Image (cartoon, rainbow, N blue to C red; front, top):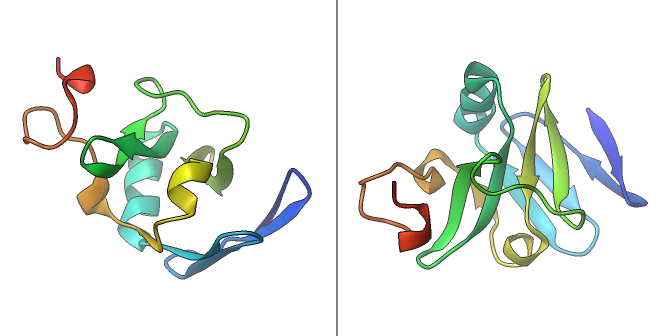
Length: 108
């Protein structure tokens, strides 16, 4: 699958590599794709106090500068800031309330 984001070509190969023009390659684990499809909503890799975090977009809306990766009827957004530093999106980035990672701003 291929998507054009602001003139940059991003190839999405499920469970494989997502090459981005300025940032290198980011691997998105198949479990992340499956999870987003199962949840039926968009998610975003954003910056948290402890590093990258995978949040639903109703908690942290996507920005116009984010990289958008289609996932079935939904999308995975990766912030441009995080895209410079990460090489993989995995389920261990998922924000889970009360798990002890993250900032006070996400506590319920």
